[in-house]
Each structure stands twice: as C-alpha cells, then as structure tokens.
Image (tube, rainbow, N blue to C red):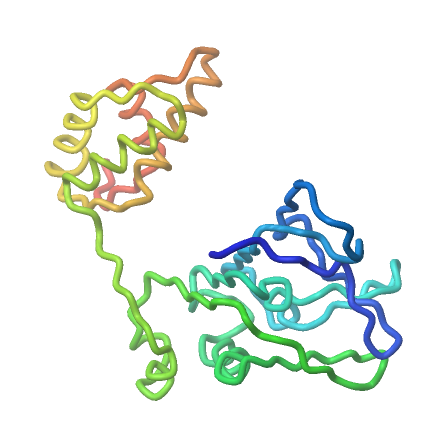
Length: 245
C-alpha cells in the first residue's frame, strides 16, 4: 500500500488524550533511524478490518473510564492505509444506508469529525484511508441506485474456474508447507463438486485444508493431502440440501 509511515502513539486534543497507535493494526518496523521524535512509531501502513460485528460506536472515539483516555475510532486508526468492511450489509446494529451515510462525507471531503464528549466539542481529523466494502449480497438489495452511484468503483469477483480452483489449492498447500497432490484434488473436484453440482468458491481450499490439518493434529499425525482426509473434511464442512432418512 506504499512506504511505511510514522504513527503517533497518542493525540492530545482539548485537554484529552486519544490513544492512536494500536499494535493490532500497526505493525512496527525496526530499522536504524536518525534521531526523531519518539512520540511517533515507524510502522507498516495499517489494514483495519471489521465485519458483522461493526457498530456505530466503533466509528466514534471510545472513552475508557478506568484508564482515563479515549481510544481512536477504527477509521482513524486506518488513516494512511486500508479500511475493509467485510460482510457489508450484515451488520446487526447498522444498516448499509447508515454506514455509508456515516462514511460518505469523510470520503468525499477527506476530513472526518469526531466527537470528544468530555470536552464538549468535536475535532476535524484527516480521512485518508482507502475504504473497501466487501459483500456477497446483491448490490440492489443493499441500497437504492442513488446510494450505489456514490460508491464509485464496483468490482465483481466471480467464482474461480476449475483451472483456477486447482491453482488455489496448489498455492494454499504451498503456504501450509503440505505436499500438493493433483490426483487427490482432481478426485475431490469430480466427487464433491462436479457430481453434486457444487460451485467452486475461492475460500474452499483454505477452509478444507484447515479441516485436514486440525483432523491430523487430533489424530497425532503429520498433515497430508489424502482422499480419505478430504472426504472427512467435506463431511464436516459442507451442508447438503438433501437430508437422508
């Protein structure tokens, strides 16, 4: 997302302290630096992710009465990096319209306003993060056309082809340092996808391989890619429509 940035450890605004640096989202970089103000930490650009658990309060400053300071909001911590709202439209306490209304003005103006309740005022802060909304719902079911126009760029990510699905399996196995066996994957595709009319999804290889790894750990053996283990993984992962009597 670009070169590293200096992250302020905290902000002091209208007599209140706002903790900004968060090791969950800000990965520090340890490298020789010329003398600088140690109130700043060199870090990778942040990638802040929120899903169905996102609530309106998470987009505002949160005061910790026990510690006596504010915690920066998610979009504030994402400044200079990425703010990903996953499962957009599935937030239990925030409708898609409300969420977009909350972020659309900062997106257009590059400035957000956060409320400092104890000081009885609000303050303007930069809004320089890249906002991404990810969903598997139909866009027209989330909001009307006027709102959709305000989301300028929309990218459809289709299901992978059979060749792409095999390549995803190859890469996932490599990432987990498990020997890839193409014959096993071809058999998996034939019996659990083609014969059952099941669509390919890019997340399936990762999830199924994790099932295999967990099962092998339970059995006290080294993880490997076998037909039997994948059958066990599919049985516990997929939910078939047909229910046997």
